[in-house]
Length: 177
Image 1 (cartoon, rainbow, N blue to C red):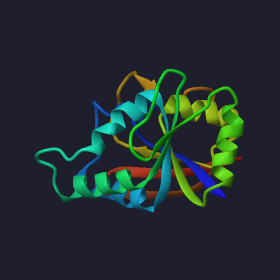
Image 2 (cartoon, one colour):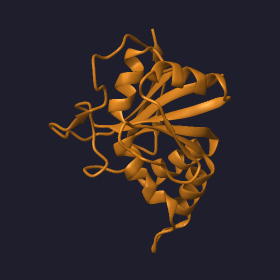
Image 3 (cartoon, rainbow, N blue to C red):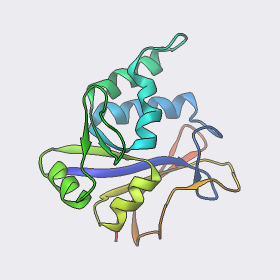
């Protein structure tokens, strides 16, 4: 059975924002390795639209960007949306009328990790009790506002592990308590 893992970069004050801070080269290589080990990714419409950037090679990409793009393109992708009419390569739209049943079927039909991308979708899946692990990549920045990592009430969590990644980012791994 697949495990749903919600992991994102987060500021000290609990916000995510891909435009206001980015991973260092070492942390990006960590994310490449994570992507290479995942069976797929589960997206909401907005984050899926952002991630489609990786569908086509871009001028100026280095080896790490090409490696991430290759891993991302290889993965299966599932997109939760009421408004999208279709999805790109290796992507399938999931029905939202019974999201819990759709995601349970997805977990039962795969083995390995499935990344959950985006706080809004993760909040919905948390409320349904479907997230198996939370990975917070805590950066030493304060944003003062924005999109919170936890879209709803923080579920009760149990610390599984913590480690320092690339000098100043701490990865905190939690499971539902």
